[in-house]
Image 1: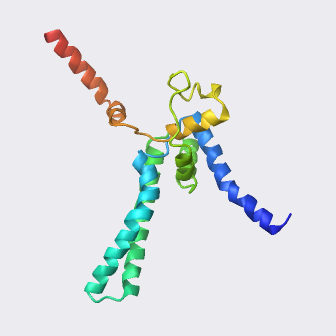
Image 2 (image 1 turned 120 degrees about the horizontal axis):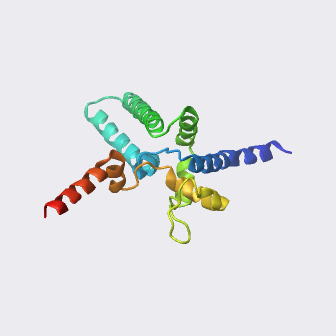
Image 3 (image 1 turned 60 degrees about the horizontal axis):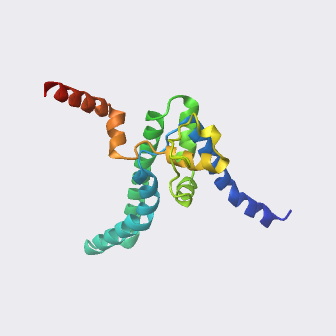
Length: 188
């Protein structure tokens, strides 16, 4: 075995690790990201769109105030470190808040900070929450699916809030609204 073969085999280790962690997370109902923007937006939009625009604006401001580009890039570097630290703290908050137990939080943090997770998510287009017959898939009946089906469900299940309706249900507002409707119908 050549050293180049070893390096090429090590490329696939993070991908395989991310896929195995995702399948395990789907079976244990582990939540990793708060929303789709948390997953896709911060991993794709920020580095590809916002960061280059931010660097260009900051360099223009430094040039206007007659600050050297080296100092300007230093400020940009520290600003990016601050933003990354805030994102890491937010990631810890999401993983601890929406998962119960040390092991679930640990697996969620491993998935959250694995750099391959967003790429696998995009590769499988966000997963799916229903089977071929249109029945809702839950962590209890995910065992009936194939390995590929488990992966797609796990990708779907990693996100806490998928729609505004989910936020209302999670906050308990859905029950209040249904009680209000019952009261209104009794009065009429």
